[in-house]
Image (tube, rainbow, N blue to C red):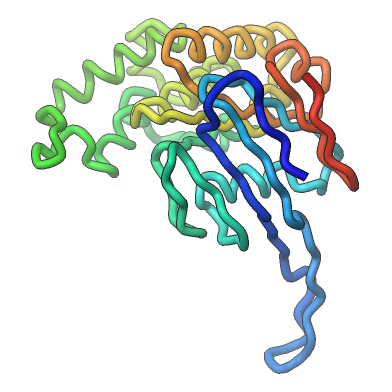
Length: 246
């Protein structure tokens, strides 16, 4: 069964997605226990939609996200913005935000360095042949400062290390860092589960603001069904049977 959004043109089209893991290996020449996680999964997600994924642990929520971002290989087809993806190839157009912001950030680096790092790695600002601007240190710093403001932090936070930030501030840095490559899709995998209620609510509102201001498509993965219902245009409930609720 394929669920199609009524909110606009799909930016993500998933067809017959299948993913299994080896749960136990009985030696080099022995049998293997294969655990299926996703089987012939089909889904359309519209451009500009905030799409929620909920369900019990082990139902395949995070595996689906990792397939979309190219962090794992898979069988089936995933098309993003009209381009068929190659399984296992990371796509910068889809960026992930993880559950524990502290574990996602190096404790030895300052927030500014962490924000600029994706630009250095992907050389987005230094490759003139691709039509991007000159990637000087000043320009990278300016872009990092602009992104800090966009996620609700003062540019002075660029000089703070991870241990000097609250949980909500760490997650804002993670969100800003993910946005540095100007992705079209942001995937939040249990992004508020480690935060207190107040900080979590602020992050939910930030996601909505970013969708409206940047035209992002956001995939919000959460055990918290109330949070998903509050934020999302639609919610898929994954389990033995997948249902979409609008």
